[in-house]
Image (cartoon, rainbow, N blue to C red; front, side):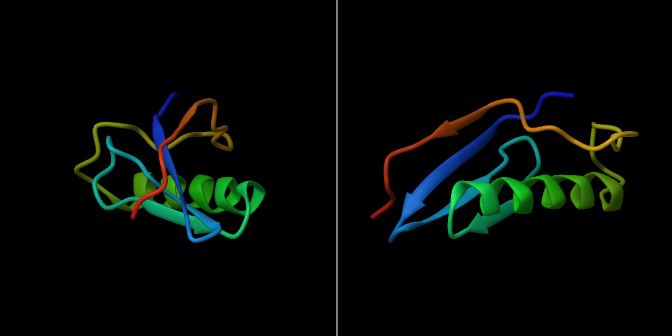
Length: 73
């Protein structure tokens, strides 16, 4: 499964949103923390959202692509 995440750098920390999963956000002080939080958030979203067009992953989700946007003001 491939899901696009948009990564933002703001005030020295990171946050991400997942356009295909409305309301799915994550944050972290560094990229390692952000990616761990993002994987967990996506897995929980897919498990809990009956309306999702995606099936929950049977094995751990691996984030394969992300887009780093300009800092948000």
